[in-house]
Length: 121
Image 1 (cartoon, rainbow, N blue to C red):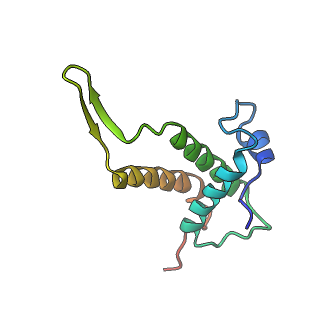
Image 2: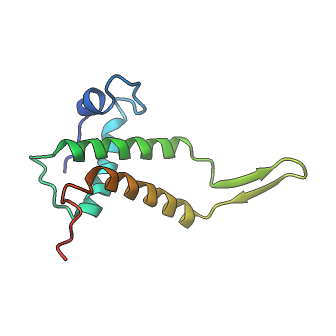
């Protein structure tokens, strides 16, 4: 299985001169994870030999989001108070729901008008 985009596409087309969030060495891993997320919403209907710019850009944005989430892992701390120290944690389920909600938002932003999200109902 190949991912829906390449590191070259990420640096040349998606970033358009901006600084890369994901290193060249790490990008294939996050692109593959992003590809799996896109496949869930598109019912695996994207032909790997003809991947549109919309799909590639979507894959890049999800890859960056997944990378940022991994870098910002705070141990699920929701809030923290200093005086008479107190900490509140977010459950793993809530954290995963938030992550999936953001991924869905990214996918709909890029692919809503492509027909790739159509279930055939």
